[in-house]
Length: 241
Image (cartoon, rainbow, N blue to C red; front, side, top):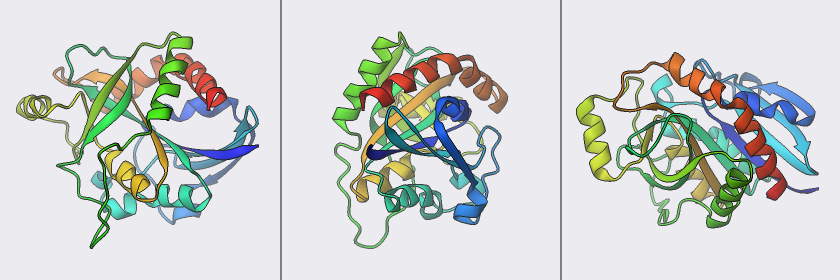
């Protein structure tokens, strides 16, 4: 088998792992000594394989809005790195700021806005983020989306701590800054993964239009509505990688 592939699965994404072979599970509590508290995050570490590739999947993540620091949030990335992961796929649910986006669109991230994120790095851990995502992995994701007829966009993700959703004026400001989608995760993990020299693919599913009133139940339902497409997309993507 080739080198293992790592995954961090965001809100509602956990059911894409149903096809994994030789599956073994452990709880976040066992691995990290702490649990995730958010509905839609099972808080499990899953290992297994698909298409002769070893997978290490973190179904869920930690968030700063749960009271964790940015450094605590990226324990997941550090764990994957310690397990020999060179390629990591980081997923999330997000609100669509770009007026061209529709609920259910897959967004292949090509950049971040980190201005509002406390860095997980400290001291002299200076890190170049001029290209936070792997172009090779972006191209693989585009190919997988086309071959599975999954509507996709390429866009910029902006982080807000939450847990409250953004005000109308917040959204206008974020859109003005150049953000296409907004969410409460991903950015600390991408910063640390870059620092550790990992290749990163960022994927976000538009679960609500940011300028429309919404709640977390709608976010989870929007992902559930796309489950079959997500599963087909990921099977194709893993096969390509």
